[in-house]
Length: 149
Image 1: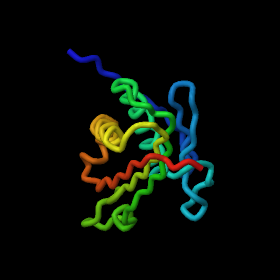
Image 2 (image 1 turned 135 degrees about the vertical axis):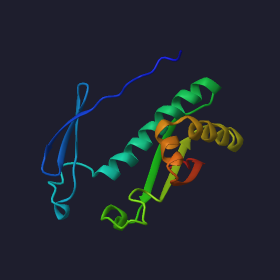
Image 3 (image 1 turned 90 degrees about the vertical axis):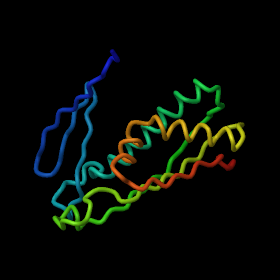
Image 4 (image 1 turned 30 degrees about the vertical axis):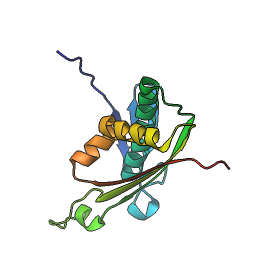
C-alpha cells in the first residue's frame, strides 16, 4: 500500500483578503481594490500560476537528478487565459483557465533531445500541471535552452 501525504492550509479572511497558513509559512491571497480587495497579495488565479511554476521547478530538479541532466537554472513566464463571464455565472463558460501558456528557459549544456526528455517527464509527473491537464485546460508549453545574456 502506497504512503499518502495530506497537505493542509488554514485560512483566515478579512473581506476578500485571505491570510493562509501552511505549516510555519504565511501568505496572502487577495484581489485588487477594483474587486474589493486590499491588493495585499496575488489574486487566486495568479497564485495558481505561481504554484505551477514552483511545482514544475521542483519536479524538473528532481527528474534532472534522476536522469543525470545538467540543469543549471530554470525560469518561467506563465500566463493563463480565462473568460470571466464563467466566474460571473454564465452557465456555458468554464470559470477557470481555458489556456495556460508556459515558457521555460533552461540553462544547460544538454542537447535539445535531452531537454525534450526532461520536459516530457516533468509534464507527466508535476502534480499541478497534470491536475490542470486533467481539467481540460489547454496547456501550451515551450521549453528552450536559455540564451546567454
